[in-house]
Amino acid sequence: MYKKISILLIMVTILSTLSGCLNPGGYSKTVESNIEEGTDYIDHTLTYDGVDLTYNNKMWYVNDLKDVPLPDPQIYFEDDTYYIVGTSDRNGNVIDCYSTKDFVTYKKHLAVYEPSLYDGWESADAAIYAPELYCFDGVYYMYYSANDKDGIRRNSVVVADNPLGPYVPLQNDKVNGLEAPVFLDNNKTFGVLDITVFVDDDGQMYMYYSVACNENQHIVGVKMNSPYEADWSTYTKIVVPGALNSTNSIYKPFTWEMLRDGLPIAEAPFMIKSNGKYYMTYSVNGCWNKYYNVCYAVSDSPLGNFEKPYDSNGVWTNLLLGYPGTNIENSTVYNQWTGFASGTGHHCFFNMGDQVMIGYHAHQRRDTNDRYERRYFAFDYLHFDENGVPFCNGPTYSIQPLPEELSGYKNIAPFAQVKSHNVSNAEAINDNYIVDCYNLKGEDAKEVALGKGYSFIELRFDEIYEIGGIAIYNSAFYEKIVSEIEYIDFGNGNVVQYSQFCHDRYINDNDEFVFPNSAFTIEFLNTFEADHVIICVKTDKPVSLNEIVILGK
Image: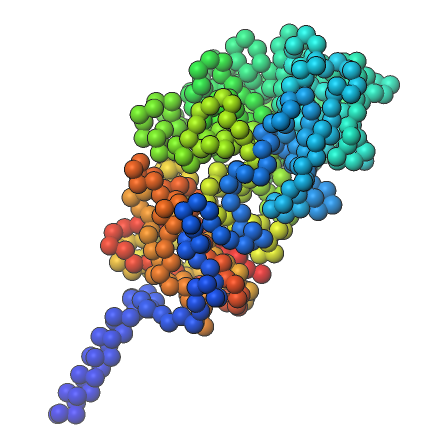
């Protein structure tokens, strides 16, 4: 009898001990670590000195708006070099270019085109806007707009035999780009700007640009017979600011496209094709405006009819990148986003390997609405949902992982099977979608919800990877942020314990605002192999996470 009672007591003791370490999902609340911060890994929160972060710039990037003061950027890639062209911020009468191989170091190339050397159609005050660089049949074409001698803005193109020029006026038996702009718009009264070119899968070229008329600044498109010949019979209105589509420009439910005072603006077009659909992306509200955002309209053909996605009584339903706010200065959103982002627009899309990126400019001062604020180049990720609809993770101010093309590490999280305990919507943890526009309808339901107490998320892979880092994206909602992660366990003692969120950099307590797309980021100095990771969070209230990115190879 005594022996049976003793055995029973021992079993109860063992079960009680296990219940303190394991939850019903089988995950341990405590784990041992064999690695040390500073020696085996870097927790970027601990490298923050109140101003800057210390990180490996071959693996991560930060849009600190310091390196490339070039508004209206467009990127051309050739032979492992990215060429960034845009509106010169030092001299409006020339075209400058930056080149880079790694987006860490940049070379500046001054005056790759200077119209004053040729005494052509441009005014002495050419005020060149938004050049874009393309190569067709071995010839490099630089498209741009400039003032003519009557002070009216025109579109034209110059050519060179290499990306850096020097570019010269295009002259052949069909056009004379010295004496007149190559693309003289059908309507010769109004100014034009922000010319861009799109080549469809069948090789057919199209040109899009913005026209400034008395009522608004809208976007038009035209089919091209060659890189320097427009088929003006196909001239079509594509996008009208505020309007649902170009065929019904009276009904204007898109009030967020008209937040600036004065003339409504739609400019800076850039076309991208996805899943058989054509997405016309463009900027609204004026480049000096805080709400200079990137929006989009969609069509089944390159010249439309283009229509903007809209839910009745919804707001910002066609926003792709930017600051979803209001002009009411005492509104919550207006105040919260101040200091995070301003003027994020006039974009382009480009590839880093297989990853599509969005390049854009932003106001260097993030708390301004100054017409003369300097604009700097920035870039972020572009993804596509299951229907091919594009979405951006940005604009970002926090540390972000570089694409595999530059870092050698790819995000392996989307390849994982996900298990969890005390978690809702866990399948969203590796879908590439990061909630950033927190004030949009239904966005809170897209985050991964963690209950009070211990929560566990496990990502397990079918193969073993070499692990270089991890980013765990926090909630976009101030009241739901995670302040600390109990542990990040890759197995075999490769455990990061008690990682802290970089509160001082990413949180505005006064306005109760968390900077979107900010994350716990860990960089492993001594890489290791793993086929899974378990993240444990302990909180005294329900919280949320956004996304997990795991850098592996």
